[in-house]
Each structure stands twice: as C-alpha cells, then as structure tokens.
Length: 91
Image (cartoon, rainbow, N blue to C red; front, side, top):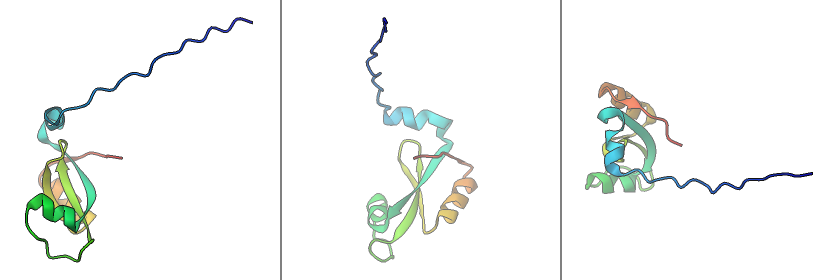
C-alpha cells in the first residue's frame, strides 16, 4: 500500500497592528470585557471609589483603547448602544 502523506508547515499568522485594529469597523466596533477596579483606575489615571478587586466592565475600541467603564455589563452594553457602536464578540 502506497500512502502519500504531505506535511504542510503551519501558516504563520501575521500580527495585526493597533492601526489595523483601529481601522476595523471604521471606529464603529467595540467590545466589552470585565476588568478589576485597579485596572480601571490605571486606565483612567485616577482612583475609583470601589472596593479593591471589585469587578467592573470596560468598553474598548477594536484597537484596545478604552471608551468607558461601567459597574455592570448591562450598563456597559447600554452605553455602547447609546454611542451607536457595534458590539463585537471576543473570546
């Protein structure tokens, strides 16, 4: 029996630059992800009146730039829609 196996090298995925990400969706796409109060304070450069380790929700442009921080996922989503941004699913 002659079995001909071809071994393909895995394709290298190119990295997407922040500029490429910013262009995705024409600035109209954003995503929500949970963040801790410490990260939120670092992002906005000011202390946040919440217990240490508290879970908040950040809304970010496709390139990762923060748009807003909310205390609930529903609040973050409502603000996303209020700003007429399209939610993107990230895993």
